[in-house]
Length: 68
Image (cartoon, rainbow, N blue to C red; front, top):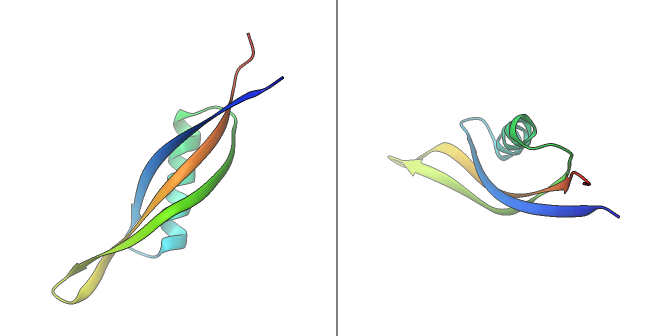
């Protein structure tokens, strides 16, 4: 039997939402083992002087805990 855990992370990109998701998953894989899924819980943009300067996503990342 496997046990999974979900953790929430926020990632930011100056390029796009897709890039923010990719950066978040990449970073999660550097820290967490056995990442199996990620879904976008929320999106937002940062606006400065009327222009979008950053894309932010809140990701829920699922990973499998190691069996004893």
